[in-house]
Length: 235
Image (cartoon, rainbow, N blue to C red; front, side, top):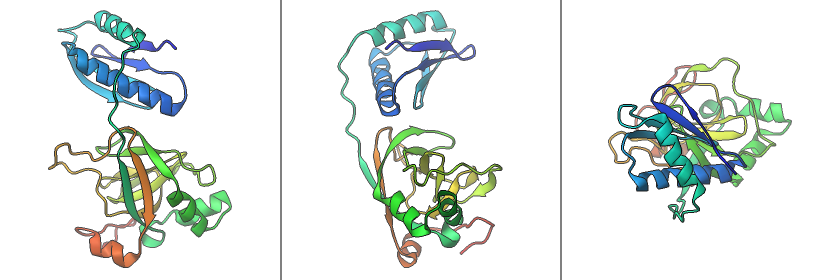
């Protein structure tokens, strides 16, 4: 299956992968490993996504044409690459109420109860499909079709750190307070991003994530710092 390689401005290119999501993600990760192994001069950064890999390069060191040719040759060779074994994260979540103000909407939109949403959301093991939007934000897929819910038409100005939301077929954790349009169904005290750590992001592509329901008492005893809620009130 031949990949498309197209320019992206004058200092980047995009490699587009075809096929199902999980297979494409594996090929994206394998390509990054191959390119790191090759140590091609001029490559500045990699931005992996579900069906694509953006490669930022210095055009004064390597041209688009030369880099494209080297990538095409690498992809044609079935070089064995051992991917890092995925880790499993168990993420504690308190669902609903002031911690998950959109839980009721998700339930009503899908014609089920709030308890059913919680059960469906927490019984599945998700994969980290990609990282993006803000540092440490992992797109976790895929949620059951029984709880798929569209994003807000108008994003919120601020979504609190630790918020757990659903956006279409994905679920995710807001690692910092930021604007956002996902439906917030809960909150966690787990922090997927810490700028003081190396590396600062906890998750890697293909890691596995399982959400586990916790009580309000446990959540409050483990959360560090002031808790923000949608609407601006603090605990």
